[in-house]
Amino acid sequence: MPLAHYVTLGHSGLRVSPLCLGAMTFGKEWGWGSEPAEATRILDKYIDLGGNFVDTANGYTKGHSEAILGEHLGHDRKKRDRVVIATKFCTNMFLGDPNGGGANRKAIIAQCEESLRRLKTDYIDLYWMHVWDKTTPIEETMRALETLVQDGKVRYLGFSDTPAWKVAQAQTMALLRGWSPLIALQIEYSLLQRTVEGDLVPMAEELGLGITPWGPLRGGALSGKYKRADKGKHEAGRGARVTTFLDDRTFDLLDVLETVAKELSTTVPRVALAWVQNRPGVTSTIMGARTMEQLDDNVGALDVKLTAAHAAALDKASTPVLSFPADMLGAVPMITFGGTTINGQGSRAWPQAPQNDNERF
Image (tube, rainbow, N blue to C red; front, side):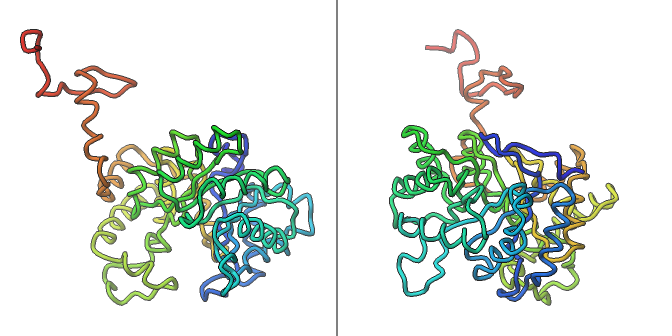
């Protein structure tokens, strides 16, 4: 079972499935999720297939996502202990209370207690900072998280949706002060969102953070169900987050996805997921599954083997425009290698460098 081909998450010994089950769709409070009964069937099927990694957040479906997991796993200690439960803090669940959310010490510890109550467990395997809270000093956040680890309420730590420079600051601080380090980075990453390759991905690889992409199908925009012929007429359950991306560039990409899927006798979502899962630095991709059919289709991505030609075609159709200094760094081999090959990467001589001894001052 491919889901049981576990991988270690970042610079840690935590073993997780290569596809993580995203539980953001557990509960219908947001208008497009699964009923609790269907959500638990999806969860059981995922576990039966060998999956062990489930991702949620305190704010997902107004807390119902955590509660569904707690009701289903909390009564069975063996099942709960087998599953790696990841949840997040930052969402304010108490409007009018300025400390009801965010990343200060008071908020973090209170949110953790609330999540433990809903999840009906006494520990969280992986605790994510959902988004960067710039109103709180990062040392306060990291020290509070260390308290939770020392108290046994949290096992591992990760950051989500945070600038690369702030993640690097937090990780360096933790390592220098002997606090629990971050082991993972959760970021949006798909064929339609590749700007993370400028700073976030190389930062994660350098600092030992396993990348767990969210939105690999861009909310369904890459599911294959939206057709160019219906452009401008689409209505998506997640609204503008999906329809905004249903433009000519996306449909051109979908054409390539459909061609690759046909050549490999598979589906468009599986190809899109397989592309993300095989990107440098990626450990476990978070897949959404609102129905059992979606779960079955998504898990099949682990059986898709993209050829070099397929990957190159998808890369070309989705090439992002990265922020400075990405374009400058692309010239580094030419400038610094002197026409040699280093770590398997060849280079051509920089024409502005001395071409022989007589040209060198």
